Image (tube, rainbow, N blue to C red):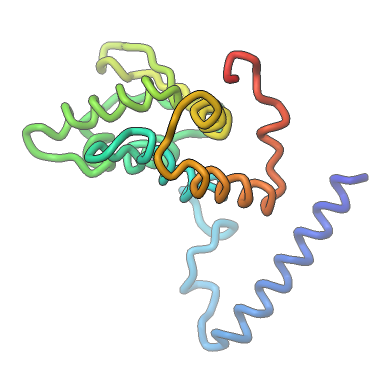
Length: 180
């Protein structure tokens, strides 16, 4: 019953947003918009991804940004939280690394994501990161914030917690003991 109520509420919110959009931009037709329901090539990304990316970069340290590498993984993942990387050079390029050191830089960013606990990997014939598992970033961030000193901790963490509540996320309710 609650699921039905959520669907009704979501549809109602969607209808209101669409009506407001049409009011604000009456001359723009749907075919000029990139609508997920009418196109292919979309993935699911958490509504908190902007904050997650900011925190990942903070955790990594100055001069070692990880957000573009992490976002590239999300853009390749399906609902199994698993990515098979057959062409590391392609992932390096999409992450913003090209040229002679592009792949090496990408691998160092992947290693750092793994050290921080955001991913797990297994090697294969395509390299060290052929098989990548993306772990729940909220659980990983919670562990870091409870166990380490992080610059700007309160502001970043509080912003994430606030956004999680806004979107109705319940990730903190089911943190496994190994993540604490």
